[in-house]
Length: 106
Image (cartoon, rainbow, N blue to C red; front, side, top):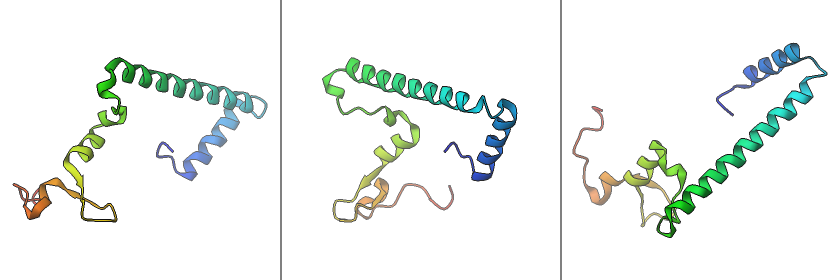
């Protein structure tokens, strides 16, 4: 969760307890929970609005595809139809072809 280790999480919890005090901490945690829930609802409605605005030809559009890492995975890596395990390999190495560059040098 947010690249926070267990030790860092405990440290943050102790700091919150010291700063807010034991009587204010539950109220603050509930308020943070409400804000996160509202943000998630807003993000989901924005995603639905974007998909609706794009029209029926983009019904399979996923906002996650805009993430550069996901875009590269989707367009440059293909599932091997012959492999039942669903393993993936680079599209540049399909059909025994070598990539046009030295992968060890990059």
